[in-house]
Image 1 (cartoon, rainbow, N blue to C red):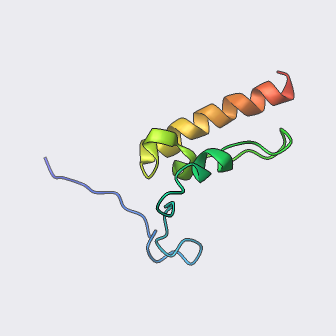
Image 2: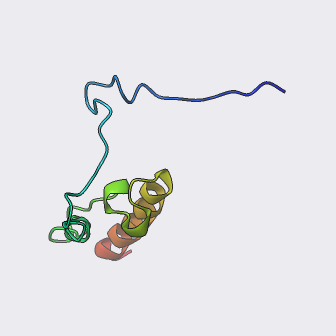
Length: 77
């Protein structure tokens, strides 16, 4: 069985340039502030706002799920 590896052009993408989220030393709590919706109309998700899963793909996934639920609640559905 051959091993296959899927990768993206993340490092060369002009929209990301290989960037990822990081907090300045002593400013980790800023992630919690960023995770708060604005007027129940603008919601943020991703690894940057994933609490203990920050900087992980799983964090992006889990925060996306949580924010999707928050959007549904805000819409009253």
